[in-house]
Image 1: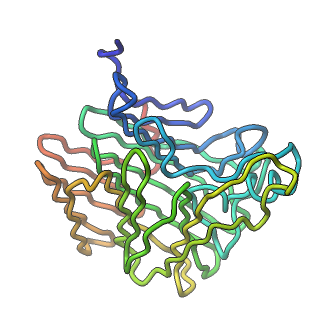
Image 2: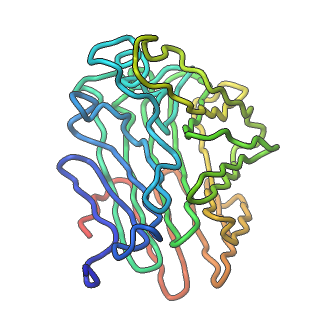
Length: 294
């Protein structure tokens, strides 16, 4: 049994990180996949940079959507190759440059420990109409995932934050719920305020009608209402009703998030150029220009 291995691993050459709660029993594991790749979005690695996936106990919960009916089909090239099929972000309804090594991403930070995993990526170069997209994922194991997205556009733009699943989302005022056969996910949109939440279970370009399968997948959009050049999304995912209460306060050009977990309190400082986490005896800051080798 891999009892002496860390439960998270980063593969910088391909731009992939995998975060787990356990390597010993897949029936108990909560797993996050993250991609931000210097290979771009070519070949079989066509998923959007800075996109993530969530698996609960060996089954897909938040997914890459679509299924190839045949290589090069309209569904394959106009849906699966496009950012709108991933758990990622659109700018003015448009995604990253599809299916090309020119859509560059990179993993900038990584940390793993028994209680906390951190991964961050930069994917601004993947867009033709975006200067920066830093996504920071903080996994307070086993059940709370905090996602901080920092976006800078050359012109005022609207942004669409996307999720996909095999089951319908329960839309609320500033949150959504998702129930799957292997667990539940509550998604709390902490910032910005006033996001327009919507979902659909149709594909813009569906698989061909001669395909031998039927997809029942749901596509969630949390959209900003007014154009902004700079925007921060702060989003919290709670697995299986994990106990967590988040309080946001303004702080010196950034935000201080106090996260009351069941048995501890985390203080997370989120700034455009850095972020810092204090959890019990652990305290560490990450600067955006650094390349973490941990």
